[in-house]
Image 1 (cartoon, rainbow, N blue to C red):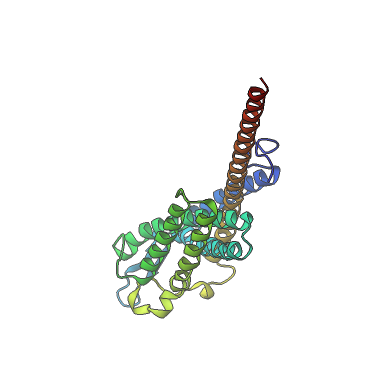
Image 2: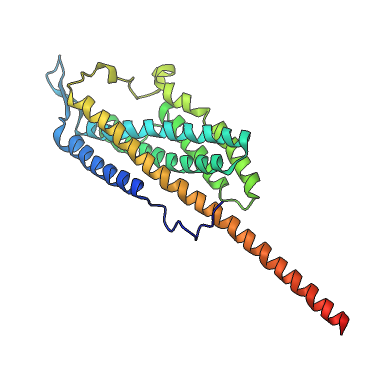
Amino acid sequence: MTNPTSSVATTGSPGSRALGLATLLGLVGLLVLAFVLTEPDVRIHPSTGQEIGQFDAVRLLYLHVPMAVITYVAYSLAAFASAGYLIKRTPWWDVTAHAAAEVGTVFCFLVLVTGSIWGRPVWNTWWEWGDVRLMTTLILFLMFVGYLALRRTAADPRVQARRAAVVALVAIVDLPLVNRSVEWWENRTLHQKSTLGELKIEDLTLFTLMIGFLVFLMVFAWLLLHRFRVGWLTLAAGEHQVAAAIKERRAEADGSEVASAVGETS
C-alpha cells in the first residue's frame, strides 16, 4: 500500500477525465434524443378512435430502462466482488464490492424515482404496493442501503468487510426475482413484458434505448472508477495513520527506555 500523500492527490487521471467528458457529451446527446427527437407514444384505439398510449411519459423510459439494467450490473459486480473477498481476503475485492454497491444503490434509487414519475400519468398512481416488480426492487434497494449502513459501523475493518460481503450475497438473491417478476407473477404486476424484440433496428426508439444503455454504462464506469479510488485512498490513509501511530509509540517507548537508563546510571 502506497502513501496516499506521496503521489496521488486526486481520484482523477487523464483517462478518467476523457471518460468523464465523453460521458457528459453522451448524456447531452441522450437527453436530446429522448426528449426532443423521438416521438411520443400515441396510438388510436381500434374501437373508439380515441388516442391512447403513454404519450410524452414514454420518454422517461429511455432513462429508466437503461438505469435498471445498470443497477443489475452494479449489484451483480458487488456480489461477485464480495464472494471474491470471502475467498481471497484481499482489500482489492472489498473496495470493489463497496464501490459497486454504492454506485448501484444510486442507480436503483433513480430507477425507483423515474418509475414513480412515469407511473403517475400512465398508471394514474405514484406507487402500487401490490406490484411485484416494484416491491422486489424496493426490497433490493433497502437491502443494499443496509449494506452501506453496515459499512459505516465502527467494527474492525476485516469483520466489517466479511459481514458486508455476506449481506451482499444474501441481497443478490432478490435480483432474479426483480428481473423475472413480470413473467413469474404476470397477474400481480402492472409492468408489461419486454417489447424490445418487437422494435425494428431502424426505429429511433430502439436506437435511443441502445444509446441509453451505452451512456449509462459509461456513467457507471466513471462513477465506479472514482468511488474505487476514493475507497483505496481511504484504506491507504488508514494504514498510513496506523503505521505512523505505531512508529510514534515505539519512539516514545525508546525515549522512556533511554531516560530510565540515564536515571539508573546517575
